[in-house]
Length: 191
Ligand SMILES: Cc1cc2nc3c(=O)[nH]c(=O)nc-3n(C[C@H](O)[C@H](O)[C@H](O)COP(=O)(O)O)c2cc1C
Image (cartoon, rainbow, N blue to C red; front, top):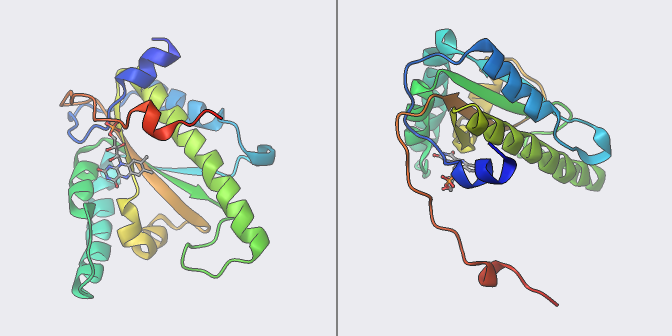
């Protein structure tokens, strides 16, 4: 599959088969992430892998965080739905910026600038992983709903630094149509 084909064929997948992911395929996905460009080549990422044996515990922790926010009367968005997806996916990879601060922490100007740069680098790594998964016939879902259980998940994962996102991977059990995109004349300006 060439790059443009992979970009066009990729979809967010929210239903996965039980079939485990082969170790070589998971390695190839992580390598694709590691090969992403990064600001000053800092490679500001750490990938924490949760497989089937720890998945129920992970989702339990996520649900505890969601319940806490709900109890405060706050909106919890699509987080319960995302937890259900993570419950099915054979692998979920959490991506951390080891030097990043929690989004609720006060940032100096320098920290704020580096945080913005590092988040872009991590975004590139995540997209590389999604495209690698596509090439390997695997589905993926990029998940920021993990922020509804930020403290709980960071503590459970035992990671310092800033959690940026989670990505679930597995063999797809659905083949959704392409979701709509804004037309280019709405988002592109030539001057
Ligand atoms: C930064 C980011 C965060 C996302 N977080 C979630 C999420 O928490 N739960 C979810 O179901 N989808 C999540 N998505 C997937 C988007 O909903 C999806 O990419 C978008 O609807 C377009 O669909 P497509 O990926 O199939 O093209 C996220 C995507 C991105 C890029």
